[in-house]
Image (cartoon, rainbow, N blue to C red; front, side):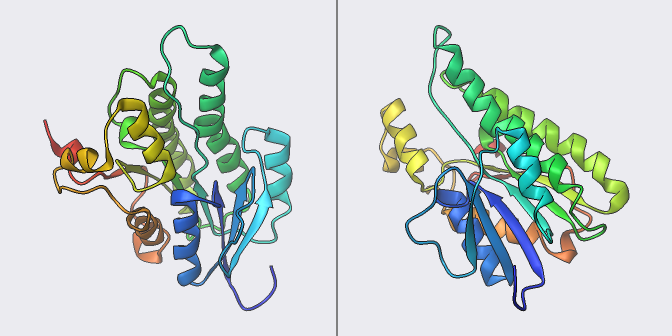
Length: 237
């Protein structure tokens, strides 16, 4: 962490999909970014450094954050999804909750010891499935609902220090994970887009732009919120 950069961000799961878009966007705003993930990307952009991290490993998370000279923003983006029924093996349930919810808790509690008062930020990437349910992803729905609850609780904990904690709830986003989901439920990307009120699915850059907004000084009074980016899907009765 040398050079003129004055603000630093950690983006978990920051080597692909939405996480990589967030990392790129934050670099454009002058952040130095650490993409913390289980596996590296083939070619990370300038300004983004890879760090190997399993967010479900509390000891590894604590050691990672303790070793950071500076931290201004944490983006809890690491995620795992998977369709399951009530007879599915318990391992998938535990893995999804560990990655999406417990991992965010481990990272957030460790980050709070490093984030500066008044300007520190935590942004959790939840989902519209943190606001409603679907029948074949009980673990993912439970984890993303839990992440919104964690956001609200930690926002109250951090408020006396002026640190904000918010959640972003994307709907369909143009990523490999969405493509996998289309296959699971037997629809095409065009059919998914047709079901969105604005008639298209979101770009990862739209999520990244919201993260960048929440990281600004002007967003200092926004905390404890779950902000959908879903083309109006959750606005329907």
